[in-house]
Length: 303
Ligand SMILES: [Zn+2]
Ligand SMILES: [Zn+2]
Image (tube, rainbow, N blue to C red):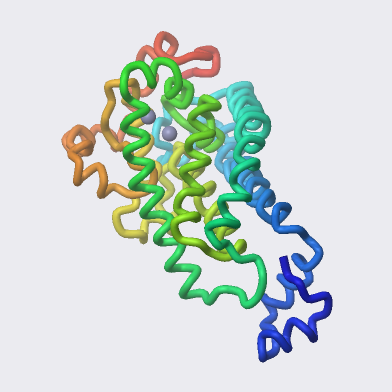
């Protein structure tokens, strides 16, 4: 929390005039306790999970199937509005009631002890980028091993099966998971911030980027002009769609949440690589036996 009541005193402490971003942050945060700023991280994540899926959701629901762009990954699978609503409602309940509450109890204390800053000066753009890259790499490595653990028999049957309900995922399915999985993943998102302490603004950016990336890999569309295609080793929607489409507890393929190199290094990419010509058109097989294998079967229908 900024301890200066007036901008003049803050600038005197800095030894220079504030930048426009620092002046904005000063006005926004000077009367806001740190634990409220920390809680806003959860609000940003929740807003991302709510808003980011909307454009492609509207496209899938409102555009006739014959006009659905060719980059829909499983074009023969059309989810109903009821399926979208149920997925969002279930996810919101788990996140708001069972995940954010317990996390809030420990997240603020952990971040304060780790040395998270909320005052001035703001971090440079170079520091922000370096920290975000570090968070992505740590999250990807931890996420890979955690996801691999989730595909062990008992854990899958009792916990991870919830996330795999949608074999043709959509954006709202990014956080659709058992409450215990959401809770542990929430802790994992904080581990990197505790390991590499940052400014609160960087934390907010990280939560927004992580939320958008989660929505993107579950969106069900392989958008050709997505800027993420410029990121080296980035998995993207097609990579993770394969994991859902050929999902199940024995599918140990494409487990990393963001990049592809963990799957290459640890050998969990081979099936995907060998079938890469098929995954380019999972639409051809997506509707086979879905009613038998997927909960909420009424949400599925063919073109
Ligand atoms: Zn999985
Ligand atoms: Zn997934």
